[in-house]
Length: 104
Image (cartoon, rainbow, N blue to C red; front, side):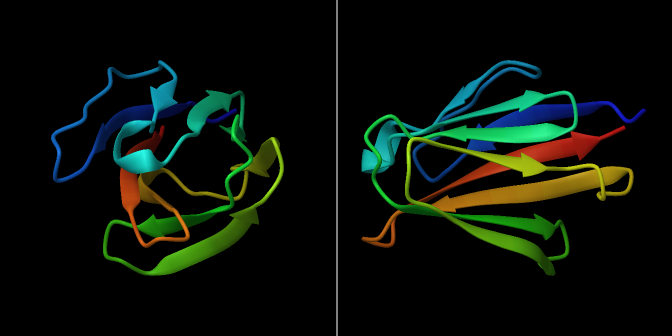
């Protein structure tokens, strides 16, 4: 079984979070939270503001893209190999937040 942790969230506004904790993306008017539960990424979208979630390799290669329009979306991470990935959350107005995800 793979271990998956959220390393940090970062943006031009300097937002950071500790490993293995929920990552809140409320800065920049993007109001959703990201958690990892087992091998599942949970995007909780309390305000139900549509957001686009992209999972990409550190090289920038996009692996998956999802539109989250409801309250919550669960995204399976079981197909990701060991390594570090960027999770980019983008609001309709173009504002975005990047979260670093590590699969061990």
